[in-house]
Image (cartoon, rainbow, N blue to C red; front, side, top):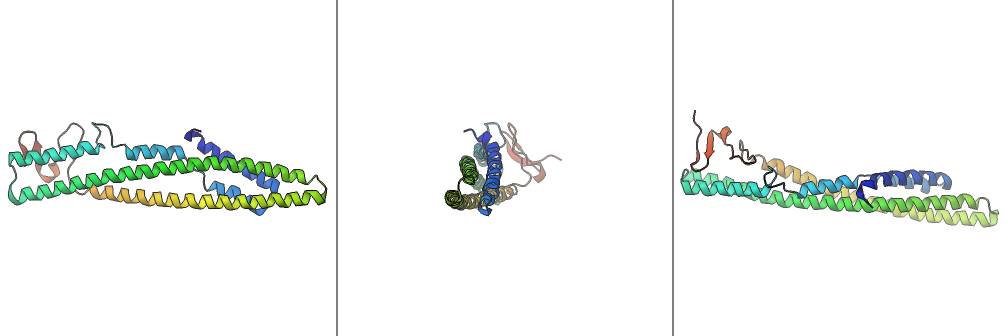
Length: 238
């Protein structure tokens, strides 16, 4: 079943269990559509987000972390070869560049982990949508059987209704357990995304005033410097 249908499957399942709860006339039956309502989500969007986190961008994209890493390493190499910076200035630049490269490596790894987490969450909620549809179908069948039992003689119909309600209670317990597990999963995913987002914000401050654009040289203008291919870094002309 396609992930794009999961939202409709969730919605239809909740609606069906509401109808079933009306037929069954029990508190446990009424609790089931409420619990299923907590599962309603969009697994397709989760999977799409996962692809975005895992995708490091096309070759000329500013999101391509491998390309940015290569640019920084090339800049370090040119600064060293052209000897525009020596001594403490060169050491300071190299230390900053190495820190930035390490941060990029961490960023790539964490983005991959976040993407995998989003993908697994999407898979889990896709399975939950299928689970909800099975619950809805079962509840409707039990609701119909409960109403049919009312037409039987009391000595037969009442025991049947009691047995049906016992099954409903067990279904309610299972649904609540599933909702609890999914809630924990979402909380864990939210924590990971928040951590990765905080990490990325911190990385933005590593090279203040520097911009890496597709097909263009790094921009150090806010630092009063310029970078030219073949000559390296030099003071910006006034």
